[in-house]
Image (tube, rainbow, N blue to C red; front, side, top):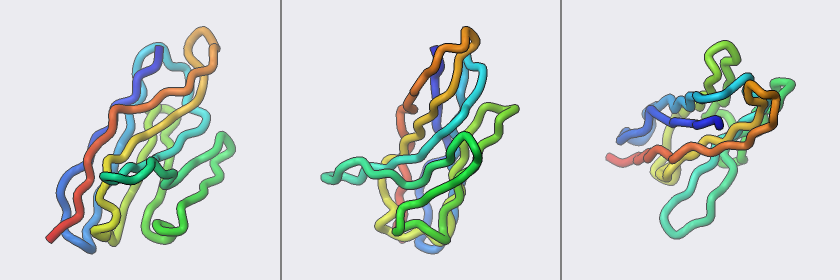
Length: 120
């Protein structure tokens, strides 16, 4: 079983930066692809950024040029660098990862979420 734990959320002023991390643990062999989602109060969960097994990335239009998703294979982590934050970025951020465990079974796991609040 593969578990994901997010960290790095918090309160930041508009224009500030945060870096979210998602650490995979348990019976993990690799992270192949991953993504970050967010859910604001009263809204549906939306895709923020994704990275494929080949390293290609894609972003929601609302965060293009401000957010960067990355993957560290040796450390089995996903990261989301968020710059020029806006109040509308306030949400709970969730990471999602797919890959293989040590028995080479595929997994698709979610983290528990981390709160990001952008406010002055």
